[in-house]
Length: 147
Length: 143
Image (cartoon, rainbow over all chains, first blue to last red; front, side):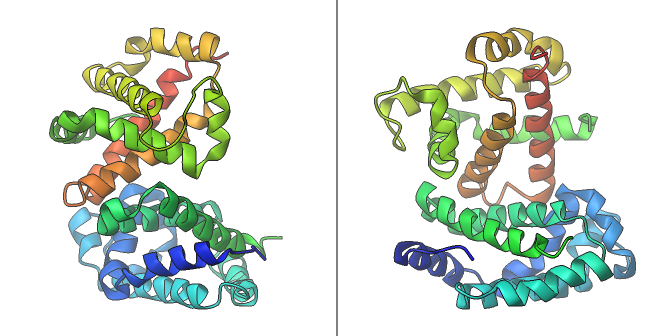
């Protein structure tokens, strides 16, 4: 497990406090699908995701965004022992959903950009560095059972 | 992933909006790159001060964004348009081209922080594609 300093924990909590899971959850998969359209391969059961308008108004995508951010919320609340939580999530994404783990990195990129839009200058270089360190740890945990 | 006509229009329109703050954007992106990806500092050992907003960072940020502005103007043929810059990076600067992706990411973050309402998913996509195409053109002469 990654080691976190007090300063890093403070920064990560500070960023996360500003995130409204409902608000950001709605935007998350829309951004991912528009910026990285090949992700569509995993969304066969989600109805119309083939135009920008459809993507921006798809309730299933909104709901899934909230699911993902709830998991991140649990991670922020359990920074020292989230490995177990991600073992089963990682296995699920590998064995059942069969997601290429590079997509975890792409989704993390979208989360960072959406947060940058929300926090603006508050996401200064140091905050960005710490936040990205946190997301990298999450991405690594999500990839851990691909073996 | 070549740029469609629509991508080019989106990039040009967004660039027109952000161009007045290009120097500031460059300085911010470079500052972030040096802090968030400390391995990039290895290319700037000759600078006195690598901290965010320092004089050398400001100056170089402006230089980099000058290159981006140039690229927007040559968006219809980036490879040909950026040949000289590619040679510079390949033979003189010898920057590992993996770093182009890193700087591009930080430019996107700065666009998001400074233009949150304009940096929609569609604009994000087109600009991401453009910066990737720019990076490819910059890497053209490497080997």
